[in-house]
Length: 249
Image (cartoon, rainbow, N blue to C red):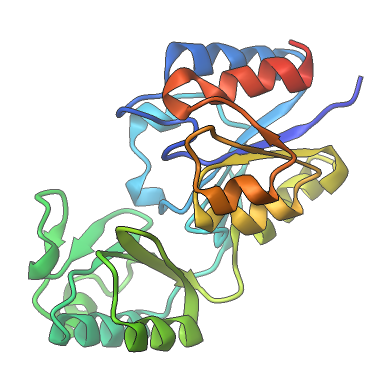
């Protein structure tokens, strides 16, 4: 039987309604017991992955849009936005009246325009450099739709995605697709034996690269268009249904 390495997006894929359902957890466990590797591949930074997601036994974690990779507790990649550049962009966004959250390895920081009660609020880039000089900055999250000129500016410097209700960016050149490759190599596998599941535009590179790609039933239509399979909605355990079907669990 073929053994697969499976990459699951978090939000809107395996994680829905603030939890990973019992049905999805069972299917993941059965897949691993059958010899497959199950990994998460998320845009979230390490600091933004809560324990209720981490407490599932993952064979690997790809985070920060492919720029941070951990396999079996060993860090294979940790590409970061230089602190001075993050501080400069932080000031640009604040001056433009745009909320911004900085996602690091250990903490979440934001400007006053994005105070959601879960971040440390900073007034300026200088404060970032002064108070958190050693924080590894993985990505930034911006609520809303940015003006086109700002989108173009960020896209020229970073791996940038504009979604319907928010924008995000990380280190340029790193995607969820590039993040899969070191994991596949570590497991002695290849793209042909790779299954990826997602729902959003930041999943497109990952889904196009995978040998088998699965869109959630409620995924963005652009995602469905590039996938080899479509499962049911995330809220209806779409990941579990796909695993049972594709792996003959």
